[in-house]
Length: 272
Image (cartoon, one colour):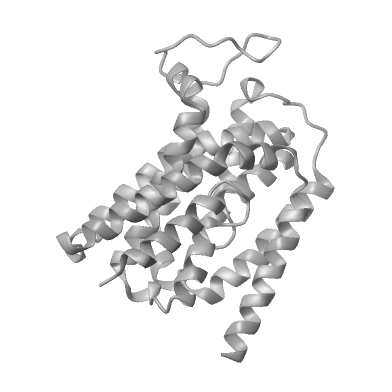
């Protein structure tokens, strides 16, 4: 049975890393390894990792609430585009479909083969290389604000998101990098990434909950609630600063951090 202490620690890690291109899932898996939690053979923890991400995602909902409601026509919002164009639900739909289809089809393989510390370390390094490539080879942005995002660019970002199915690559890292390589500004790529994460994470959490429902019990309720609330509070405190940081800071700095974490943890695994 998992403890409240574990829920608090993992919740803090999730809240701090969800909005940075460093892989929150990868950081949680590494943290669980340090806590001697066998994530690979623990359906409760696998479900927990996705459910608490909803806590962090709620922070995004609070930040982007007006834009989200405008997608459904529930509030009027002035377009940031000089042409008067606006982001709409179809942008979101074509952005999430690729990862949604692949995630459903290969969910079992991902759980069985990829949710371990070794694959996370590989993902951190390769994801860092992608961030450097995106920063060095980025196209001159043709889309500066989110409302100017084209359907083609939204779909391209959705395809880049497929890489994040590998733990350690980072959903925000792959999509922000992919957006920059597709001619979208860093700020607009980050905005689209965070908004697109909302349906993705709700869907993933639902899949894992239904898949592992039989393995869950009422004894796990407090563990889930505490982790969810901690992730939400920490993310809420960090979200404004981190979103601005991701929108402005060069991706290479995040890449160097990823390399450092991978090296430190690899040495830890070798020496322990």
